[in-house]
Image (cartoon, rainbow, N blue to C red; front, side, top):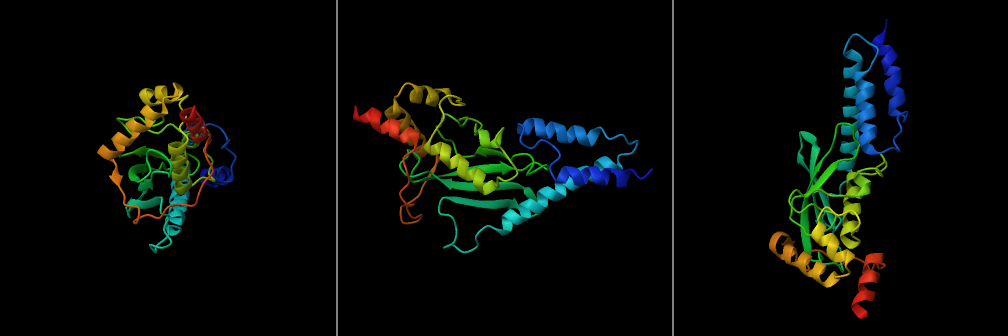
Length: 237
């Protein structure tokens, strides 16, 4: 029996989205691995073929994202910079992001480590801060980030660059309802924004890299986030 031919068709179907990619990423990953391990085949050739296909798909996507990175200094994003750690291994990246303007993180840059699974982009990358940061959605010791985009809301349409932008958005608009840093979350829930921003700025001074204004240009004026509006209203009363 032509097992490889049979399972090539199943692999082809997988590549075009038979698996429920809208489901939570952890479940999607378990389904993929179960799909690989439960072939009705006495040989491992079909399983190896599917695993190889997923890895090839990940590397193809990552090469494309790498090629889309701007080369000239003038074309580079002044707030997000991505690079591969090792040209021989596209599964490990580093990112440098600048703190959003109007926040306690403004004027500082932060380093992140990005580890990409072999099932990417079906499964989200693992991202964590290497720079210590005081934020309700970031674990202070490990740098783990709690954000839905890297979990249940991930889709293959997202990229490493867009994931970095999502992380920048939580620096502007933290979610205190699901904190990894309970101290930061409690300050925001109690409405003590002054204490939160003072603590965040203190840790920026100690751990992050300060960037002179002339190195990275200021962004265009942006709309206030819900967090900024609430903070302004609280401080004005």
